[in-house]
Amino acid sequence: MPQRTVVVASRVGLHARPASIFTQAVAASGVDVTIAKPGEEPMDASSILMVMAMGVSGGDEVVLEAEGPEADRVLDELVALLETDLDA
Image (tube, rainbow, N blue to C red):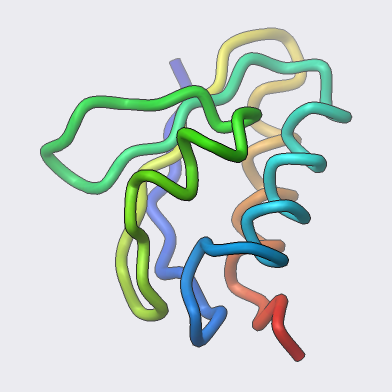
């Protein structure tokens, strides 16, 4: 299963607006994606409640995994999204 590690660029982390933008992108991709802090249990990346409950702050590292024929492309797009300050 393809995997990417990324540092979250948004100053507030994955809360409110950045979490909404991220989870909407995951849902629109049509690919099953999980997100986790290193060493923690993966969560459904399309669920805003699960993503916000993780307590990801700006500068935190997260691990994304995806399954499916478009997994690599989707992960690359999600990494680019998380490397952007979504609060700007």
